[in-house]
Image (cartoon, rainbow, N blue to C red):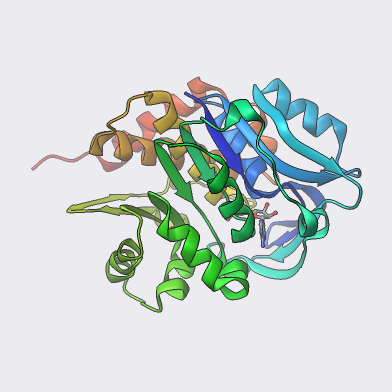
Length: 303
Ligand code: AMP
């Protein structure tokens, strides 16, 4: 079943202990849609400037991503500059140039209003609300955000959170949002704001998922080569939501959510093996299945 995403499409300038790149392709919606497209049809809503490469747009389209909701506007593409120290779990922002996002007012193609699965990717909560107002009776709506928006638009963000089913968020950001250090308590506090399920991304320590009476913990895949953690969170979310959409049933079970977590973790583990979206572009279902099997042996034990 179809999956709609709104989020950033970007040029990223990134420095990590393993190298430095300037103005490579990034953005929450870019990583998300590439990851999700391995598992389900994706509809992408975003905006880029005229400086965004045509060949990237063609590459996204060749992965089956529907780009009817992508606007090419006069002006420059969103640009994010950041760095990582040896703690690759924490991205430090140097600058955020919103550029064409400043005046973006998304309008969903009429046929997209009934999309059953919706992901409000990391972007201005104003745009997340805007999309939410345009979709009709979605089955599952999930949301991601980051410190930039928690600081800039806390009220609007809370309004979006009140209206979604799932929040997928990283560890530092859930602590900031709830003013609670303990993750179990923080997840409970966040669920009290509206969503029935919270998925906490913990970088190299994996994922903690909580819903009413349920807790699930998954490790991250222990890799020998990690170049660039950028996009891991969005790739996780793409795999997670892509798997839910591929199930196509109205009543998702706890096991569906657990498997979705493992698909997300498997896909994210490929993203960090190269800079930008390089590794995701050629990813096949076979690659993902092999990593899922590796995850199974990683966590299997008997009592
Ligand atoms: P993550 O998956 O959490 O590593 O997200 C990485 C992506 O988030 C990068 O490719 C950036 O372009 C994008 N990004 C960074 N800051 C923002 C922001 N304030 N709003 C939207 N996207 C952002």
